[in-house]
Length: 533
Image (tube, rainbow, N blue to C red):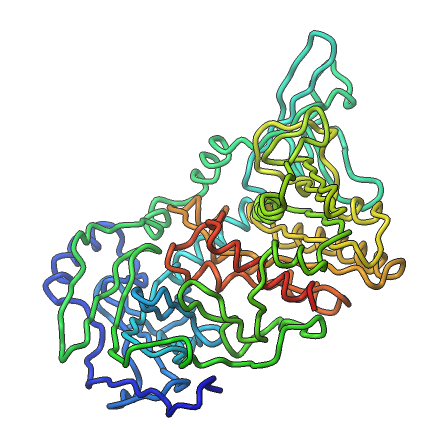
């Protein structure tokens, strides 16, 4: 629907050509590519996209169909699918952006379709990115099968004057003498190599060894596979042409390189937006696991959800209205949910975050804060192993399911959960098993406190580089894990999945595992719209 009584704004578009690369650019790169590898792979500087059935004019809320053709480095059409493309539309001057309606359609023959709904008028650019080629994904899957537990974790054992550092993980080679730290309540496994002449009870500190983990993962990739993940393949200047007022920018290689097509439309204002839903967000709005539309779009840096209409609400307004008073907020998970804890604490007057234990760290917690004026408390603790973080005390590591079981909950209890990033360097089975323990804990929670609200934050996109980054923390893998979370948690009552994937994917500041406050503010506005109903 269009939220204006005015006539639909028209989008004036001239006829276009495809966003194809400059032929001289391609020919100059063919020889270099053949020297790298003879095996064809999807290449961004040869692939192109076009708008299907381009019209002279469009109306607000019309659909745009973008056809993507994958091509290899030798300028030949690909005949198989499996590439990971992302696309978005944006208008820089209006601080407006939106992503595709649903997933990009893969026809398994080298061609793809991306569909957009025109949400605002103005000069709109359409951007397509090749995140991972089919061949890169095949390489990642091979590495994951060969080395399903790819990260390295150090366990420090301390006993009297002895101190030794050993390997720890969710599984270790059977040839090693190990200490078994499987959690008795959840059954979640964790093992460390047993140091000689030291008891298992001497396990005192944990840390992620990023350097060694990256080196060992890199060694599993074949040289021809590593080349599939390079951020730049020596195309220093992208081809840029102007054809009948439509700017065409060809693909460049890697996630940071894009293809752009601009269409020119009428000047925009907030009264002529294409709003999908006029119904106010309420707790009976169950955000969908699978969507046919984008989660929403930005206009003037404000997020418009396609599920329901968000309130113009802040933490301060929620406090003044009383809807946040007397609340106890618990945050369990990774550093992306810690950002939410920090945001809330920073917005409540005279409230300061503190370390909950003597050995706590600001990165992993446990942390707490309280507001006497508002009778509010806040608590954050990182999820348990695997934790890819700085050195922390083993005594401070608690499983989220156990933490939820130990909460004395009521209608004033609100729980926030997010875990994905630290699990990407393990198998999907490890992640699914952890989600299952949390799901069971939430079902037990609802038996004793049916009015407690739980928010599950989705994964969000991030910047990264190279083969190691792609297979250990990359977006393609995060998307698989996020899909598993959505399926696992879909049927839990009073649980709301806050879909932030699109909110980082298409925002003007770019992909960031720790988004800036301008994005966090919009996350929290969704949460407050559901709390304060």
